[in-house]
Image 1 (cartoon, rainbow, N blue to C red):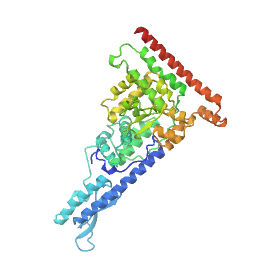
Image 2: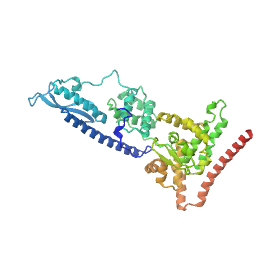
Image 3: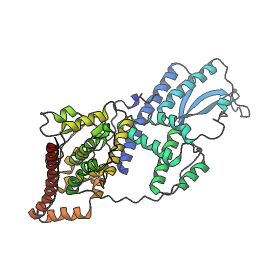
Image 4: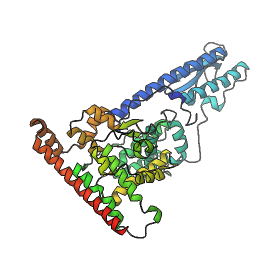
Length: 467
């Protein structure tokens, strides 16, 4: 079955994306496996029916995660002929996995064996004796398995943006932490894992090797005895609204302080990345959701009175319309400036593949570092979630706007809720929304916005004088 052939998933919708929580991932895996098991059992029953209808004297049985052939065959040399008929019931294992792909293979092998039985031409060859082990010169390396890994992986996972995203991480971990030239034997795998000092790297390497091993039914190494310390959760410095507004200016500051040797075609690229910064801050978007098939015409349309950003169906959690938490930021950050939108079009034009979009996404992170923004693109998304909580937006509404489940909103995003934010929310609740505290918060943000507007006005005046 080709990767593009995803008929086994017709009519199946996996549970909503979890953004990586353990419970959510387990829920998705269980639902997917349950779906595949139903499909497998149905396909197996249909294959048995076809064999019976064709009077093929070979059955199919499932044992130890493999599909075996069952038939009455001439007694093997060395076996006892208890019935004196010269025949005995045998189960033959050809290493066929108990999967949808394996059902097709098993049916073909049953047809072939059935023909030999019908023609009285059956012989106990090495194939049926189980002596045709796949022996190669040396041991397969990680690189040798990648093509089969991709094919088999997408035979058991619906081809979606999320599954492609997950598989791309598996490939990256294999290349970065394990090495494509690493032989898939116990000694080599143990050495690689032992050499990884970073617990996050070790955890990702082991997790990916387990997926590779299970997907391809590899038995040349085990991972059960490897112990990994649970990595410590890294602290995040989630930006306040004041910081979000303040660091927006860094892109312009970079443009006037950079070296003069920059290519002419890249002269205004900072403007697009500043626009991206503003979109992520205002709408809490994932970076990919800005670059995948952006509906620029709708964004600039006079009909878009609520300033909604349409997230494309091809993204991680599908289509949605995102709303701004601070509507005035649309104007403050000049998010409907046609010049910036043209730069966006030119950036994404003709780039629709997962790899292409991932390259742009990585470039987004590098721009944040380049202009000295002290937080990541995803931190702006976390800040949106926290801001919504402080403002009293119902969790379901905030979760829907961000395109994830309520479970993720509470379990994953709220772990970045700082002590200061907790103090603020508790105080507001106790004081029934103390007006002074609210005004202080608003004033800090407004001061930052005024400074940004002053800077923009000064640039405009200089431009007019020079013009």
